[in-house]
Image 1: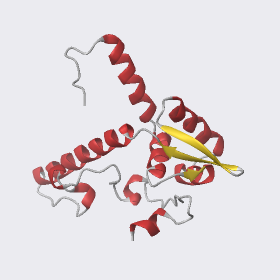
Image 2 (image 1 turned 90 degrees about the vertical axis):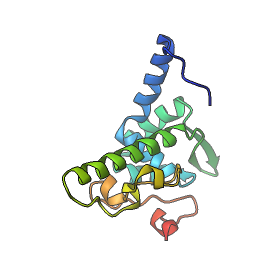
Image 3 (image 1 turned 180 degrees about the horizontal axis):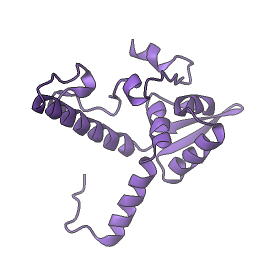
Length: 159
C-alpha cells in the first residue's frame, strides 16, 4: 500500500474527502453492508436499506459512479456487487475503533463491556471486511433481511 504523502497535497485531500463523503451516508453503508454478503438484486438492497426504491437507486448510483459497486445483468434483472472493498475496510477499521472506545469507556466507569464479538478489542478481532456489529445494534432494533442471489437470508448464512 502506498504511503500517504506528508503533507497531503490539496488535490489529494479533496479526492479523499469526496470518497469519504460517498461512503459516509447511512443508506449507502446499509447498501454496502448488504452487498458484502455477495451479489444481490435491487429489491434486496431496498429491503436492507429500509427506504424507497427511488432513494436506494440514487445512493446505488453514487456508489457506482465512484467505482465501489458494479452491476451485471441476469435475465431481466440486474445484480449488484462490490468491486472495490476499500469502503468496507474503512468501515471495519472504524467499527473496531468504536468497539475499543466502548470497551475503554466501560472500564473507566466500572462496567463490564458488552459481551459481543463486535466489542472485542481490535487486537483480538480477526481483520475481515465481513465482520459486523450485531444487526439489532446497527439497525436500531430492526431485523433487516438481506437476501443473496441464491435467496438465503444473511441470518441463514451466519448459522
